[in-house]
Amino acid sequence: MRRALPTIIILLAVLVVLPAILSAVGGGYWFRVTTTIGVFTILTMSANLVSGTTGLLSLGHAGFYGIGAYTAALLATQLHWPFYLTLPAAGVVTAFFGIMLALPTMRLIGIYFAVATLGLGEIIHLTLLNWVGFTRGPMGISAIPGISLDGLFTASDIVNFYAVAIAALLTAFVLGRLAHSYYGNALRAVREDDQCAASMGLDVVRLKIQSFAFACFFAGLAGALWAHTTGYISPGDFRFSESILILAMIVVGGLGSLPGAVIGTIILLGLPEVLRPIGDYRMIVVGVVMFLSILFLPRGLLSETSVLHTLRRQFGLAWNNTKHVGWRL
Amino acid sequence: MSTPLLDIRNASRRFGGLLAVDDFSGFVRRGERVGLIGPNGAGKTTLFNLITGFTPLSSGTVRFDDAEVSHLKAYEIARLGVARTFQNLRVMPNLSVFDNVSIGALGALGHSPLTALLGRRKQADEISRRSWQAIERAGLQNQAGELAANLSYGKRKYLEIARALALSPRLLILDEPAAGLNDTETAALAQFIRKLSEEGLTLLLVEHDMAFVMSLCERVMVMASGRKIADGTPQEISRDPVVLEAYLGSAEEAA
Image 1 (spheres, each protein chain N blue to C red):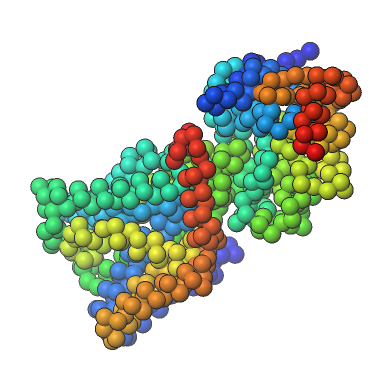
Image 2 (cartoon, chains in turn orange, brown):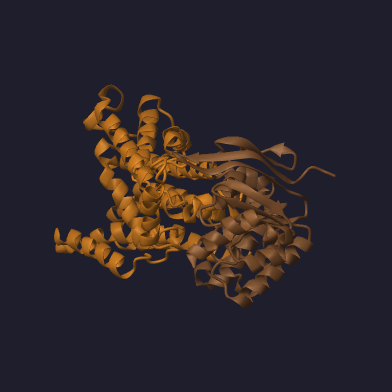
């Protein structure tokens, strides 16, 4: 395999070098920061499949992340399922919800789809917040068991780190396979020109649903990891602002690029931690970095399509279609 | 004689109060090169959209290879072997030439996330083989790795045709292939299209360049105000008084 060497380097870097460095600089806290970044890389890589590769601007990704987190948390606290069952269950349940919620919106085009997903995210957030009998509402769910396996390992920062790291690597592998294949080209064709893609024999609606389902599966996985690694979740973790943060990470890294999604996450989550010594000013620096990156790198660091091009297409689609505004029949 | 490859019967399409295509009947035989001409706004592109499933018919039927395709979706009709190019070029600018062409092969061979996940080589090899074949037929070998956005206007025309060829179509529908090309480029394109036809492809094309249509096509259908007003060999058409009035009359206005 010609890609064997980079793969080995990445595996070594994430599974050996990174934990060694983290232990050297003091362990605990930095492991938790890295774990958070790991969970968000899974989120950004999955959102990138929908928004970057397939070109469907999704503003509700945090909602699906929340469904995964609550699925895992409830299964673990109410039914006492171990993490190796709650993890895939959260992915499957979220993918199922994703498909069900996406079906009515899949024929929407451009900005209408974006607004519909914004609504979906809010519906999920408000449900988590107000269905107190089931989700405990704003009190959240606490005492979620950590990631442990009897006789092998018990929950600790290092176990959390490895669980998230392995999940993120698997996500990168699966999403990389999907995006860097002819199947990925089909998704890109949907992004570039969906009507033209249809005239070439591509089933556009099916492709959109598939990419949405995959993205939701991994968002659910990220949610489950978040629930198990932090031990406490509340609806506040899955607000609209998180969806926007995910999107910002993708845009900074470069729409449509898998490594870009990872780099964007590291920048936007790592920077505030590194800048902690300068206190609250650090969020200003983060804002400035985002602003400058859009200004000077409108294509992001590693993108295959520019944000402006994608947005223009999304808005353009909205006012091109005079007969059935917003719908592709 | 066998049934025609494409058979349009009493096709109509209404947009609000406008009858864009009005009771159009026509056919294309296997292996034929048919031109569709008419003044601007005659409904030619709408007719193409009806054939390819982009716009639903208001009434009438379209049959392709003895099967009714009137109610099929655009991608289903494409998979049956009807490929098209667009009047305003629709290449995918952020994709390479090869990736653009691979879309056509992908549409013909089917696409599933499972084949991508399992890394099945067989289908990928077939897509790559068909794409290269189409790229070579269109003479784009040297630009295969180039982003489509960086191609010249003329080359993009060939890219669109290559992408359509990768679908392995039985009917190729070209919407104004020569628009925007100079005389040399038009002549080269005519030669290329003729070669495709000689290799067995059935062609239906809309074109404004009369010399192009008259020299290339074996039969010409003429449309005006959504209706078919004439159908015959280029010689017959160029002498038909109805055509001269409808077509040349508007050409004078345009001049």
